[in-house]
Image 1 (tube, rainbow, N blue to C red):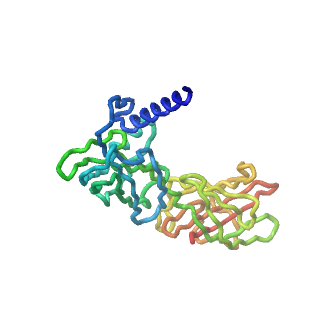
Image 2: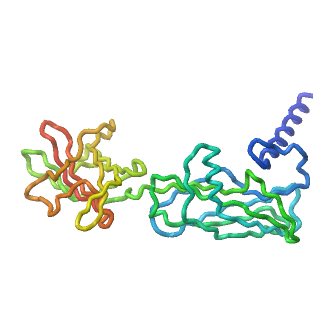
Image 3: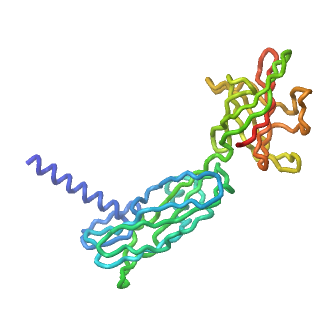
Amino acid sequence: MKNKVILTLSFLAGIILLNSCLKDDIGEYWKDDLAGKMYATVAVPTLQSMALKPVAGEVPFTFLVNIATDALPTEDITVSFVVDPASVTKYNADYKKNYKPFPTISMTTTSLVIKAGTRNGYASGKVWGAEALNACDNFMAAISISSAKTASGKEIAIAGNMKSHLLALPISNPYAADYRTVGYRIRPGNATEPVDAIQTFATADCKTVRKNGFGNYGAYDITIEITTNTVVVGGVTCYKVIATPIDPTTGASVGGMFDVWTGDPAQAPADKTINYYNPVKKQFVLNCYYTFTVNRIMYEVNTRL
């Protein structure tokens, strides 16, 4: 008797799960029998994610489409798709998020034929233009099934809560890379200590990178936040940065950046603008200090490799 009860409960749980997968609207469940019904669905309707590099070029993606039915279709079924920004808006409303529709997206597969005797097929699309977007914004692409018909013209129902492929598209920090660091550290009263090294600028957040090294001194890191404030250097509009030397063991600030160029007078640059990023030369020019009995000084030109 105990085994029969367990089997009955398992069967009922399976029916409830199947009904929940084919509900038309959130909160509404199909109570009637599903035998003989047929729905066009996206196989995985939950939010997926694909990271983008901030570079030019097309990035393809694919997703699985399913015909949900208790018997294999006896006719070919044509499923059509549209880019659907309204589904991004609905997702934001449902889950209290702030995704923006990805602005440049198209379907490579505008329609797909699922052959008789099968249930599945893959659709594809593409996005591009990530290099022109703000990495601190949240983007999403939404592709929805717009129609599904059999070869004889019969309309196939579209499962309302399983009609869309939702794809989050985070953009990598565009400044994270390897750089050649050329400059020096000054310990007042000692000879200037040069540095010429390859350093990795790692992602701290969407607008901040972090590197190890203060001139030739490796005990401290520097975080570099790229701001929207600008300064013109040599005819190029550059972005001001906030550069902060930190102790990597604690994350605490150990200094700051200078307001005006401060360095070795024998190595004064022709242009004394400091603490900015040049998007044409792909250079960070930094002039910072860390606190000591007499503050230590660093001047660096970091050029992306």
